[in-house]
Image (cartoon, rainbow, N blue to C red):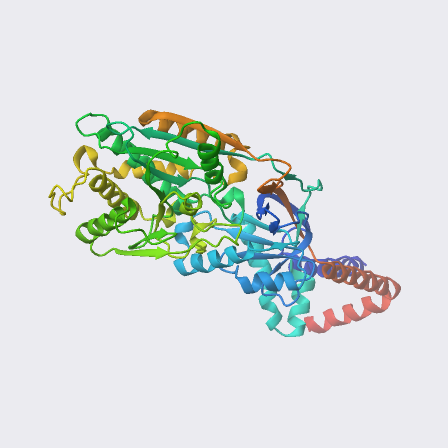
Length: 554
């Protein structure tokens, strides 16, 4: 009689054990993980809209390799994000794109970085209704990525294997952005410009303006650190301030040129800070160095890589002009000090029909102030001028130092007129106490890339505001007549409108697919059917089992 009860009890237990084994390799039925994601840029520059207009996401995560992406959140790594896949997700009306960004960019191959930057630039040219987010990789997100990637890869298997995997072992990931508040635009962005001077010897001496923009740009403002563009330009400018302050501190070594330094905001948005600063000095100020004898303006932009140095001008300089002499001296310094470096002069006319300018010096050229931009980039539309992958790991500190030396040597030879005085071209002027310091270049770059410097964050976030204040203190440490000018936009006719919700908490739910519930329901129904059959035919089952046991013993 005991055997009868054992039969009834053991059979369903064996069935449940089989179901548990099938599910044993999978995740719990439901769990959640919250992480921070950063929304793609959204701004209006004039009448043109850029970036993504959406923020809400409630969708299942899928790999970019899936054939059907409609109403799904497409999860990509940096290596997956291409213009073709981005456009395909748009074409299929994907619910969103989530890009996983490595925390250590030095491990990313250079060709992958280049490919991502190109796709990143292309995606920001136009607006899209599809929400696009970027998040820093972690263990949970990488696990999710591998799961959805394997699910996509299994589609090459037979239909039976795909169905069984989907029903038994697959895990679905739901991506959920819980912030339902509407996206709002703001036009009260303040652009901060810093200026300071080193007065030259004598009265009414010519002025040389040295400037760089300090803001950054990329797919997501909160991930835009702008190491090369334009942390490198700011770093060189600050070193030039320190070195030339030593020369200007003594009456015997003070040249007959005034050096004026400026750091401008809004450089990534048509150089709006530069535009407002020029207008303030030329149109509103009663007296300004820009009103007086300006020899030329030197703009520093993206100088941390490559063995090439381009000099961008709006018009070919006249042979007898100061800017022509400076360009000639720079070519001489490079050829004698760094012969492996290529130097090129790029002439690009300003298209007055276009509403935007390509380089910062063009803002001065429009007001008939001669200027040039120094950069290792030839194309102003280069993807290197704005990317979330432009981090400190992508810059070459030796190139920053080399370019800084070239600029300093050229400026000194120009201001002191050393060529006419017969000074040998091989003489190194900046050495010893006047040397570019490796430790200072490294610390300045680390400081500038310690927080994102996106324009829409600089006057809103405490850490970013502190960075601007620290730059102001650096100016006050070495320069005279330091001024901080805060330019606010006209709300009735803003140049640029930024939008909020750039930083969002996202919840990822890990759940079993609906097919698993159907499969489990079928197992339970089968189990109940077997139990019912055993109970209804207990005598018959018992007799058969008893006969089988006796046969085995004999």
